[in-house]
Length: 252
Image 1 (cartoon, rainbow, N blue to C red):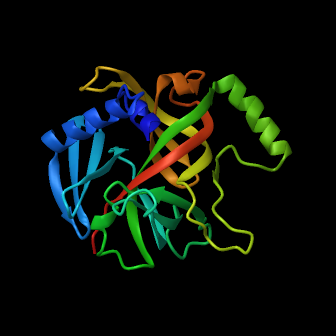
Image 2 (spheres, one colour):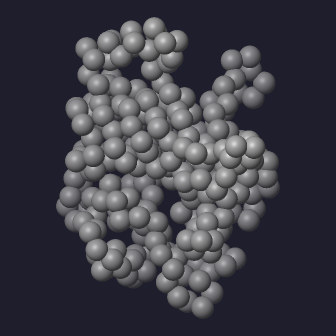
Image 3 (cartoon, rainbow, N blue to C red):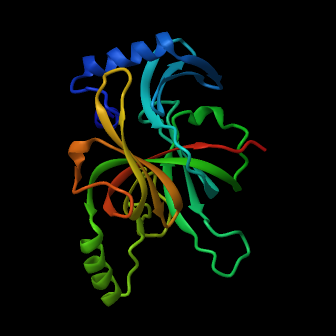
């Protein structure tokens, strides 16, 4: 999880560094009770969220970062993925993104998994259901293509009958077609709608923030500048591997 923190401008290279921010989160954050314990959410600014976990015995279990942006994707959630091997408070959802209205002729469904920093508070979710999700894509590694390179890439993709916008979940299915509890990661090719450099108000380190147009719809993206090759700017095409973190926006 250390590199997820680095993505948001936190200088984390050791377990001691990570614990430092866990303790800061528990000190300055807001506590939220859940069935199996509690979360403490610290929002220091610039869209950054840190979610520390405490079990029913008041023992700190860990912490997950999230980036709170403005994106909203319609998702048909069809399954839960508890991450008990990591923490009783960790978990993910399996679903299908549906950017087109349900019932429309051009409806396109894309399967994916996204981790949830406050997974244990979603007892009210009745599966299957359709809801809105704010998704943040944390760049593992990515490359940006300028306008000139984009035209060349478009030509190559047209030759192979592919689109510039692609979304490929990582190791989601077993050989028999069943869903496996895979990592919430995907290889994405997307168009950059907007991009800016933000400053972490805790460490004063810089990190990228962008709005992407993907096959799922519009996503928020954050990245460590060292993990992005090329110029990240509006109009560019970005391709790379991303970890997906999401929070449900609707309650019904």
